[in-house]
Image (tube, rainbow, N blue to C red; front, side):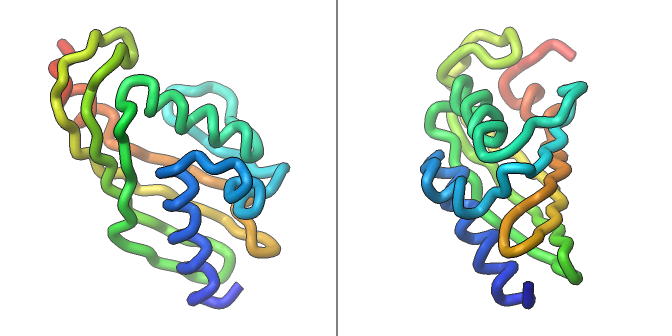
Length: 137
């Protein structure tokens, strides 16, 4: 993929995570994709695995939205910095709804093949998120 194609694919990926549109997910994510999520001993797989990640976040923050702040790409690999914003309206990691707004940064690393995401290492600032909703750490 050339750099502009990679950037466009990542912008469309942000549209996917903000809408959970499975049609778009199936287009952008390989069925063999592997997603490494902090705290999960086993990686998530394929478009359905990514939907599960989104549903976990939407479970606690139904209005959560991601914005893409920066992209650095080289070859088939992309580093992206995101901001997640939402409102803690439901139980999240055992913490009852607080109504507090969050703004959390994440750095994710992707690998692309044939125009699709085949691997992601996601590194959201979970400590910062838990602090913002008043978790006792």
